[in-house]
Image 1: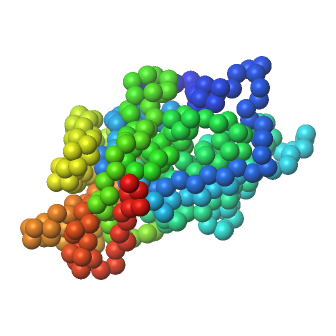
Image 2: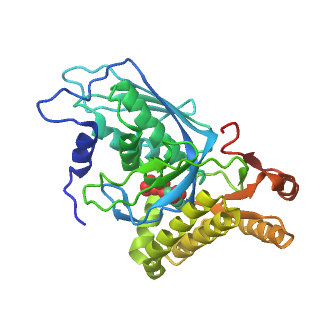
Image 3: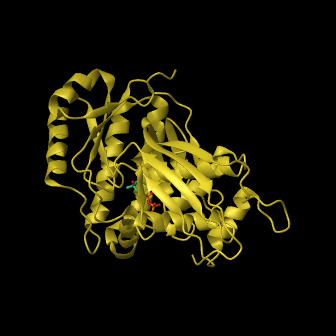
Length: 349
Ligand code: DP6
């Protein structure tokens, strides 16, 4: 599908209701905007775009958000003068000022271009409670928090569904980070991308646990954006992916509805390994796994042989995310030692 160059701007204008001649939606109403959003782990994955300009996925996906892990962001507008040079945003990540040519800033500023008036520069202060680019989906919480902060700064008062559309433009998986609990990101059918947003799934699963097995928290060698683009371009196996992803997503939705943990775990693990199979069959190959990742997989399989119901999922990085029910917590802690365990629905009823 081809898109004109200003397609993202047109998309943003449609979402925020910015029309020529109407009230200017890009004038800050407050001195500072604030947003906070959780990371999310996909149980059936998004891998591959059918439109790289509007960030439209080849398939829908389902995730679970992790409370307490995520991004907190504030945004203010820098004072400008009539003849000021092109705007340079100031971006602080985890207390450290970043150089404008840092890839993180380049991507963020390109996204902010969609929300700035000529000569306006932004000051962004953002804190992650997960290691950046470690395969723990910090871009998802990052763009979701940023969109919430923009909504606050400009006082658009958009619905969460619309905020999900905007977050998607920054990073696909960010569309799901507007919600706590389970979320479903619809693939959408329309060429304008207005029907590809995430919605919450209204089901609690208090016993469900997610364990984070940290293998490596360094910057990943291939970004998900580049990785999935190369996969779509060069991987013959990828042709089978959209169909499997659709089937897996349905299976995950059923498992959530029925609270069928075996089905949830099996489908999530199979889906993740299938996605990684397409990565490996890409050229040049994309292998996010480290030897410790494979060792952890074997530990999971051994535990299952011993009757412990535990499954894993993995994203674009070497770390494993374990899925299990609370009853298995002692066995998991014993087998993995240094593991962070999160109960996404703890405290909610
Ligand atoms: C493997 O959302 O980071 O984590 O849209 O290019 O920013 P962009 O990609 P991103 O990809 C996430 C891929 C994944 C699977 C998932 O979260 O569904």
